[in-house]
Each structure stands twice: as structure tokens, then as C-alpha cells.
Image 1 (cartoon, helix red, strand yellow):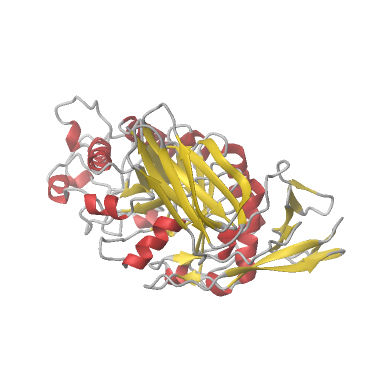
Image 2 (image 1 turned 135 degrees about the vertical axis):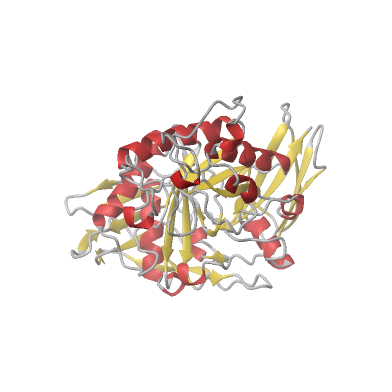
Length: 492
């Protein structure tokens, strides 16, 4: 089982059966000219999905080997972004008005102090109503779905879908029923309504929190993101074991029904190896095919970031996590084990039943304009009794890889013809004899074929053929010593 990771540049990755963390990227303010050719190639070769507010055929073509999620705020923020027709919105009183107000005009608009409007989930009318387009959620669903379909994007990421602002963040008029339960219930209706317009696309929302009906919301869409896991994104301080446990249990309870994104945004993360290890190990406690981890140094949130921890591989998990008599959280894999101590004041100890290799990420961080990268994984022998200090973790591997898992291996992957009618050829070149895994996923992220399953192949060029009867979009992924490359293929 392979796990994954995402963020600013936010992306989430299709997982496979090798327990390996995969990278992700959130591209929050990406324009067509934001990245260099080298950076585009890096993203195409190392990420699976990219999220961007930019809508264009050029963007779709440039990121040809990844899926694209369109970023749209459901709360009505970013009025300076050309996401919607703001002149049309401002001209209609029903937009952002309190839906049960007697008077529907600008005096009843729910406006925040951030010069944005707060969506009212209850303000939904029939899609065939003559004035449907003048109500915000109707307008959002219709417009966003059209935008996703027009450029053949793979789905929609709805930001701020689950956030309830505090009273001091709202201008008058203050809604009389502005409560947790009212706005949670309205959000249920809004999420379900938007998803109805995108039945065959991914719909992911930002707003997983312990007190806002996360479980119910996940049944209405395809997935959600738990933002700011473990650390405060502004101060970098640890949020405490209570907040950590809420996120872990939410992911554990819902990982089989929805795609879940666990997001770490911590200032100074690039140079904080301990925080990175704790975040990754915490994620590995609950990781499965639907879960994604995002790592981002919040001081550099507008830059592409990549960390060597994305290449950690521990094999298949042997079961769910558990905790021992010392309240140390543990999950075992067929090629390793993770030990997590989320408590802020107590140190834990653990007696290893065999020698291991402690896995540590060295370097990593910002991907420069020429796409250079200096990160790698180190493997240090460890045995006997180990100490796990407060808010820390150990990631241990049974076997040490023959080579250091670096990201700059000379590997190529080609699929042709594309689109294909009969067989598609899968061609790749290897720098040396090394184990290789080739897998095929369908459009929903389900693995449907493994033409090569961790087979040691000789150095040089290899060509394999693959075919399937059903037409559609598929993804071919090759994994070689921690480096993963994905290509999109289409069957006519």
C-alpha cells in the first residue's frame, strides 16, 4: 500500500499497494506562466493531482500527466479573482442574502470583514426556477460544474465549505440563527447540491473538523481536507494531543468511504526534521488508499515544495494502529513499524524485538526554477530500547535499500499510442538493475492491473503491452526505489 502527501501547491496522489508516502502539491495561485518548463516536468513526473484556480485549456495540456482539480471558494471569497461574474453577483440581491429574510436586498447581505460574502447554505431553489441563477449556491453549482466540464478538469475543490466565522468577523446584519447547528445543516444541503451537478467528477471540500459534522459531510461528496493538522500554521506551535486525536480518529473512521487529506502547514518545516517525522508517522498510522498527507513550510507557501519523506516505503500494513500499555501509538508493516508519541509532556520507551533501520529525511524543500532537488533518505541502524520524546516519532524499516532513495534518478516513462484502440505500449528505461512496479489505475483511483509487481529488471529499455476492453481514462504508474512517475492514458 503506498501512501501520499500534498500541499501548497496542493495535490493528492493515487495510492498503490506499496506502503510508500507519495507527494502532493497545492497550486493555490498558479497562473500559466508561474512555473518553468523544468518545474512543470517535475510536477508531471512526481505528482498525481494538481489543484489550481486557473481555468484554461493550456493548463490542462501543460499538466498532461496529472489530474486537475479546479479550486473554487464556496464562501464567495477572492473577489479580485475572475472565478465568477462579480458584476452579475453584485447586481442581484439574493446573492449571499439571509435566505429567510423578509426583504431580499443588499441590506440583508451577509458580509464578512474580509470584504467577502458568507454563503448561506439554505438559499437554494429549484434548478429550473426562473430566478435560480440569482441565488448563490445555485449560481456556484451551475458555474463551477460548467467550468470543470469545459476544460475537462478532473474535479472540484471547494474551499471554506465547512467554516463558520465568529461573530466579530461579520458585518451587520448579523443572522439571527447563526449557530453551529444551523450552518452545519445548511452546509449539508449546499454540499449535496453542488455534488449533484458533478456526478462523474471528484468533489473535495475544505472543512473537516471535529465539531462540524465531518462524517455526514463526507457521505455527501467524494472527500474532504483536515487543514492545519497538529501545528498552528501561524505560530507553528503544537496544538496538543486532543486536536491530534480528533484528526486521527476522523481519518480512521472515514478512510474507507471518502478521499481524505491531512494537511500540515508549519512555519520552518523545511528545517524541522523532527516535526516532519512526527507528521509523516502520524499519517502512517491511518494511511490507506484514500488518504493523503500534505506537507508545507508555511513560510514558503507560494513555492513548490518536495520532501524526501515522500519516498518512505514500509510495505503493506499488517493491521490498524494500536497503542500499548505506555500509550505509545504503533502500526506495523511487513517491512517496518512506526512509533508515535503525541503527548506534549511525557517521554515513552519501547523495546524493539529485532534490529531496524531508522528512516530520516535529509534536505528537501523548495523546488527551484531548474527543478533541482537535494533531498534523500538516510538509514541508521537501531536496536534495543528506544526513547520517543514528547511530540515525536520513529519510522523504522526492516531492511535497508541497496541504494539511497533520491528523486533525481534517470528514469523515463512513455505510453503510446495515446489514445489507444487495441494495446498500449508502456516503455521505460532504467539506469541499472533494480526492482520495478508498474500499475494501472482507473479514473476513480482504483488499481485494476499490476503488469509488473516489484520485479528486478536489468538496466536499459523495457517495453510492455497492456490492454483493456472498456473505454475511458486510465493512469499508468511506475515505481522504482521510491521514485514514482505517472502517465495518463486514454482508451478509445
